[in-house]
Length: 152
Image (cartoon, rainbow, N blue to C red; front, side, top):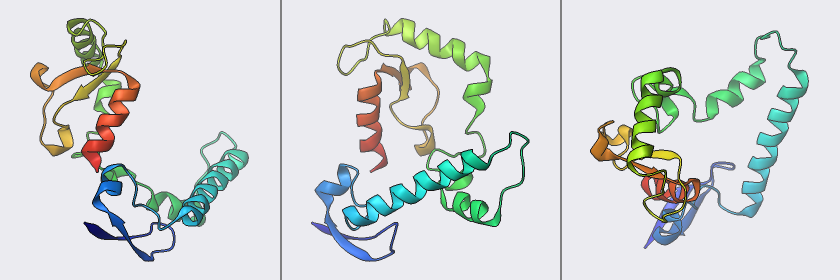
């Protein structure tokens, strides 16, 4: 089954199979647009780092426009009611995550290798919760694989 998509770089339309979309493809119409986007992103962050003075200077209009097009804030698929950073600042979450890792014996439940990432089987953005029954321990490889399936 072919799907019509818009290229993130040139806004042109192209067709891609459902099979490829499920594997995380379908953002750009081709390698040329993908490489242009990567180059622009790299150059932007290189210039930003080069111009940063460490004093928190205001962004230029060019920077503001670029940042507004990224998946920041409410545009991010992980954003939920402004609570995107509560886990990093909350020490009770760290203790809770440690409990889950101990429960799973620091082992990835998918490949049985050492795991350290806590994964929501039903993501919070899709209505999941922080209950013990919804959380498992995964390694980085398996977490990336599973997340790519959930987002697609």
